Every structure is written in C-alpha cells, then in structure tokens.
Image (cartoon, rainbow, N blue to C red; front, side, top):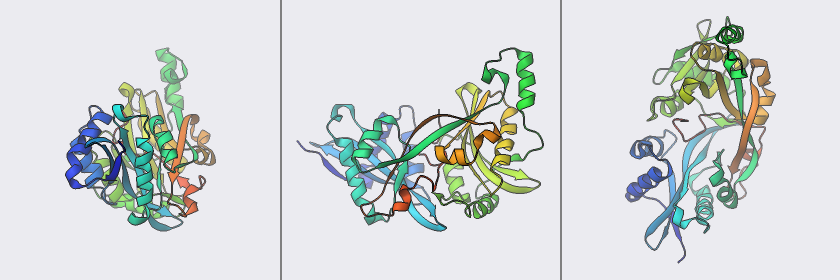
Length: 330
C-alpha cells in the first residue's frame, strides 16, 4: 500500500509526541513539543506525517526562525525531528516527507530550510531537495595540560595558568528579555549577512525557556558595556564546555572568546569548543584565539523551486549552536 503524507493537525499531537519519544529516548517529549513546536516566537512548528494503512510511519518538522538576510528580516525554518519508524524504513518515506515539506514552503512564506543534520537524515533530505552548501566544523581550545596529554598535576597547573587569558571581558548571567542582548544584536546585525536573529526574545526562548535548562545564557561585558552574548553547556562529566552559541558586536569576537575561555578555565574542564561554518571559522582566524579546527559535517539548505539563491551561498551564513532543535547536547 502507498503512503499518505499530510500536514499534522492539533489532533495528531499525541502521535507526534510518541514519535519524539521513540526518536529521542529519555526526552520529556511533551515539554519538547510545548517549547519547540508551540511556543516558538517565530511561529508554531509545521509538521508532516506519513501514514500507511492507518498507522503513522514517520514525521518531519519545520521550526520557523526569523532570519536576517542582507539587513532585512525574512522567515526561514530549521529542519528537525525527522524520523521514520524502523518497520517502514528503506521504502522512501523520508524522501516523501521532505518532498511534502518543500512543496509547502511557498504557502507558508518560508524562504529556506537549513541545518546540519545527523547522518541518518542526510540522504532523505538530499532526495527531498536539500543541497549541501558547506560544512559545519568544531573548533577546540585546550584549557589545561591534560587536554594535550600532560598528566602531571604540577605541569597541568602550570599549563592551565599559561593558557588562562588575563585582562579580558567577563560573563554575567542573562535575565529574561535582557535589553543588553538587544543592544548586542542591534550592533552585531550590521556585520551578519545571513543568520538567525539573536535578540533578547530569541535568546529567552531558546535558552532560558528550554526544558532541559542545560545551556545557560550569558551577556559578555567589557568595561561595563555589553559586547556579546553566549550560551554554554558543561559536557562529558565536566571535562568539556561547549560554547553553544556566540554573537558579538563588530570587532569583539576574539576578545569575547577570551572572556569565555577565562570563565571556562575556572572550572575543571579540559577543553572548550564551538561549532561554526568551517569557512566562517577560517575567516575569523580562530587560531588567534587558540582554537583548532576538528571534525565537521555537511550543512544543508533547501529552498523552494525558483527560490532566493542567496540562501545557497555558504559565505553568507552565520551558523552556530542556537541553530539547533536540541536544548541539550548530552
């Protein structure tokens, strides 16, 4: 029997919640749907489900994001929660779901769908019209001797002291609707050609309201003025700190990284890392802040037929950890 693919309605919520439970074991699926699907400030999620003989085979979703494109606000979407139940796999269900979502983009005013998906979703997304337009790389900085194989506690302390930045900006916890974030975004937006709008509304929803509460956001301060915003997560039993997101005013990127590294050095973490478009990280000369490029994965973009080709230019994109549907990386 062929599959029926249709847009999910409110009546399908219980089935979508169950699919999420299967897809992400251990997650509070109801909390995820409330936060990500229903309370997204850019708009409610758009979900499509595939059905065979009355049984739901899988789903995929678009999570609307306000994007900044050449100094204008446009609507894009982060693709996520693509899942096909095991008994229905290898029958083209994923491709059918992505086909349906692409056909609906113009009707919903969505200029592009973007993201760096897991390996399982790469092929269905490409079959559904997504294009690989670059790679997202992980950039890593050691914080102590143990990160570079020096196990002696004395040497570790010495290296930790050498690696700890001094006289750098400092971090203050963000508050709900923090006006300092709006000030940072207003200045940062002048240099961002294409990326999610990272204002106080977005940061409040994406980090403060996220169910897991594992990625606290901060304002980066220098001489009493906000110069950036970031969110951090402690991982791997405290040995790693991920810079989940970072946005700064022009000219403050490296000093903000130094402030974050100083903050991280006060913990027991061995390393700190951040994910960026590989080409962006190279242009930013991440090595100057002590970061080296490590592993990477494809960055995909899907536009409607005859859509705006600017979304397919990898040199325009600013992509970081807030461009994710995960509210915890562990």
